[in-house]
Image (tube, rainbow, N blue to C red):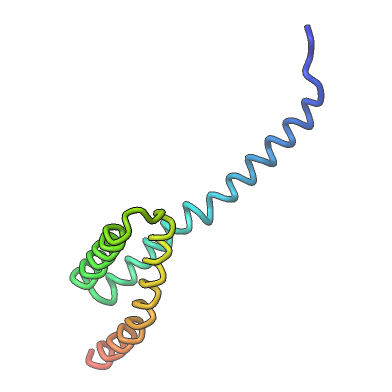
Length: 108
């Protein structure tokens, strides 16, 4: 019977590859889920059910409109465009939310 050569090296290489793949999962799968959960709880605390619904409906409609406007554009590019638009919206809305939060605390 023929035994495989360099078994230890293969196992070491496979473990390194597995560790690298698992490390790549954190920024691509785990972090976005945690970000969405954190953002949703903060949004709920600041705006309540109505504000959260409005923002998520806006996001769904905005992404859908971009997808309809450019049906042959790769999904990654549409996502990038939507993220840039969302960043601008957040940069505009965030000071307003902070101001509303301060005003709300002042009247309590």
